[in-house]
Length: 312
Image (tube, rainbow, N blue to C red; front, side, top):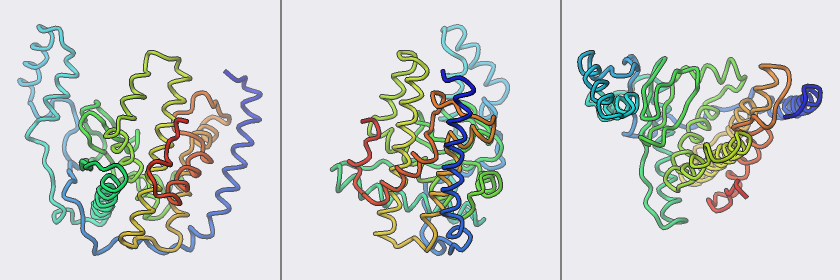
């Protein structure tokens, strides 16, 4: 553990780097052109749960929930896990067709998801000689229950390996603009592509390898592995942008700067500096602003999945 005095000096250095990076991108971001996404095909793999209860056992009712808890206690099982499994398979979850997503924000998410499907089908086939399994993307408001447990919008977008679904509350778009000072459609596209990058890791086994370290190594070592996983997802987001541009010409002037601006805004060093005035590098779980921008740019320039080994 570094002492607070040393942390302050290191933190100030990272903060100045972040400020410089912001200055480099601010002109392009302010003079951006909107990402070319309108009138494009959306994905059929969007689940719209907005307005639905995210509480555990909501699909079972009170009596059903009590029955499941009793069964779990009698069999020595974990009631939470059993409720999660029942909820994941509950018929109350509905997949909303793209045509029914009639608000602009959800349509945008659907289009970006479709673009990721097209790109990763191509990459898996041409670079891995494998078949890409499409994930689901769940839209929710406020709170949601996944196979990985309960989550609120405050935790931000996330991917759950257990049910192979990405989850996002569309209020995060406003957070990017107002809280993180990272406006623009492509900032949001980067976030979606990053979460789908976690799905790719799940399919390729990287997520399991990191998860298996939990409890077997120190917290600091596990955090380092988590950082590598997150940076690889940033690389995959850049790789997606590379191929999406090549296939469908989706990018406009300033789009990549928007993505880099978002990556810069959500680096561990910057978030810790803003929250507490100093940084603790061994507690990082997602990587610094500089690291996140580096790996996104590398993925965008390369387009080759084999160049994304952040675990070396």
